[in-house]
Image (cartoon, rainbow, N blue to C red):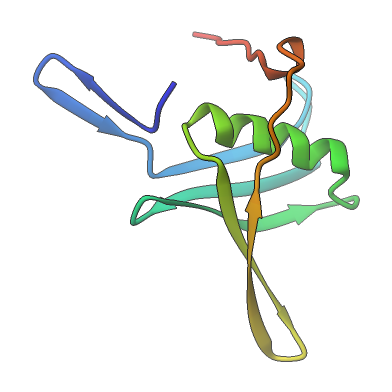
Length: 104
């Protein structure tokens, strides 16, 4: 999957994804917005009832990598100062962990 796809005369571009941590049918316990701006991937608006874990981050990174990106940006405000962080997505050889399920 890539964030830009062509189907006949239509060009589709993924520019915003809402990701939710939840089992099917259950209320979600965390959410993030993933946006593509000027060819760069950004994670924004992370809200969670519990801390975002390393496992959560790795799952989000797997999705971002499937969109064709090798890095993403995030920002935080600390003491009134906004800082922007660039994160490179590490390569993994575990093919089972990189698979996704599609539902229709």
